[in-house]
Length: 456
Image (cartoon, rainbow, N blue to C red; front, top):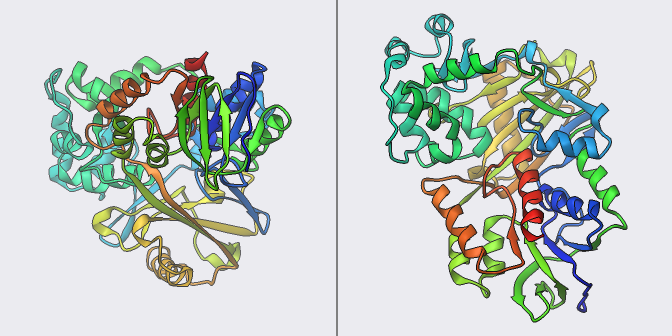
């Protein structure tokens, strides 16, 4: 590939949602840009498949409605009428305990109990933990607490059982990581602030809920009727003809008298006045290695985990289960292969026809190289044991995501500060992505938009 260049344009490296959000910001402002992405399909881990009229997400299935960036971008794409919420009136999440699926008790905000009676009556936790949860209300404030892991924070307040059967399964589906290594400051920052002010996480959460009473309601999670791939398709169409597209892997960046030269796999180059690096931290480290070894080292220090999603589709009558909830979580202490399973048609309308059912299963990265047939057999065994499902699936999909989940381990906040300081030594260079300030879709959109603003 020969060199390409353009006057005063911005090169965006990475075509996931962070890079697409940055590209759209530039396109809206009429500023020239070139998007460099090695995959033919844009969107990164946001990918929707339609199989037998069932809408199946290969990656994330929704986003937090409380964070506005995703809804704002959806409105700009003209997709506001496609937004739906999760069926929160049907929300029941089960957690596996001693081979039984036990519903999470009412009043839990993640692992924080806000109603003690439902927790006291639940068989999910032992009496020692229940008593400790009640007494935690009287904990003293800790304004000077050091950085702790998620496990340390929860253990100090509610004990090890709360780590094993609440914190670990609830966070494993989001971060795919170990609560013993995830930073509470980076992952549960709001809880850290509540602890500083109130001491008790329960007291702080109740106070926060009281402050928000009467505020906007609605579902906690939002998505699009036809899947989040609708957003990627709309962005791709709106950007066509407004920015240049290069389908290649960026491998290096170098300063030039006019700005930047981006080296591509295969030997080609792209010239630009500015660069937005919107790829995962590992590839970003390799791209900037020749530019700044310190920056590369800090980026390389952010670990990533892999994950898999396997969706099984059934004829509804053959399933033999009421699907009375959103699905279940499997704590690590009980785990075989399944980490979680979502009952898609219950969680969201418009995803599964009435005569079908879809079980969307999540597996950790440890199994990512196992053959499909081996994994399908193992999952069917687990679904038989946990849900009584013996029917053969009518169809299935398998999606592997290698090193896709950024891990906010201890020291993450300081690493991000160092990365931003080091990147600041290179005018015209900005970073975006899920390894910075949040892994959710709204966080990634916001990071792409912020990178554009930084370079103006």
